[in-house]
Image 1 (cartoon, rainbow, N blue to C red):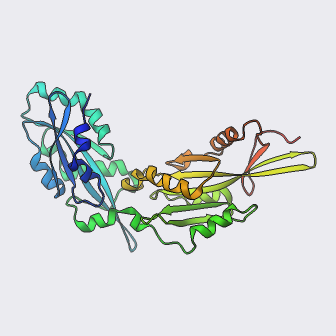
Image 2 (cartoon, helix red, strand yellow; image 1 turned 30 degrees about the vertical axis):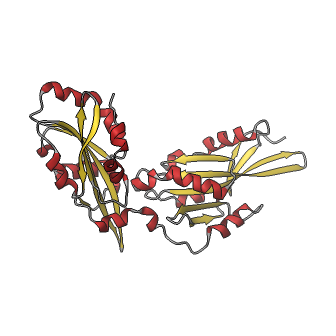
Length: 322
């Protein structure tokens, strides 16, 4: 089993995970049979990293590359990480067995890697090969180009919270309106800015479907929406509002923003204070009314409603009216 604790505690590893640090590569050696230790790390990206890959060693490396995408007047820079399992061509056969034994565990440790390559020579990990593999992993969201030598300018762009757009309305105003009984606002999408203010990404009165239509597959978003639990017995009608908290973490969102979701959630819980159900989704397919109903039913205990209303004309019937 790979022993990665020493690397995890190292300053070099912490720096490559810091989106405000220029460290863009790290190379690790194998000590003993399975212990990972830092060999070297630094700036200069790919070109500097390959100088530290020893043909007589088995090593692991993580290289940061910036994906550059131009949309109209907006430039997007997204960090991409490349995991390298290096089995030097001059390495003794008995040592090569170490890599195959712990490769998957080390790859899991370097969990931010978008792609992984196992190579024996530099010719097997050229920039063209890395670009091809990154494009394949990105699918239809492949960047226009890649930057292999990261500069301070690129680092400035990767701090995603700085790119959160300022909204025309305040979250506090929309939130207060949302909480009102029978308010016209029944969903809100928002983002957390670097100063921990909440910026409204969108809101509306068209229920869950309206919220889903607004989701962006390149942005981490947080949302809250209402589901009405409806009951009718004779002439008595009961409608209870249920708040559902959504964490939207699409695969194509920046890796640093995805990594901060757990921290952001703790901040948001203090602001929202209460809700009845929580869902986390990486794609639209992860958001189903059936799953939401199951979660809400658990919170209702023995007082399950006859139907749930997700928006205008959008209902899930659970039991017939009496």
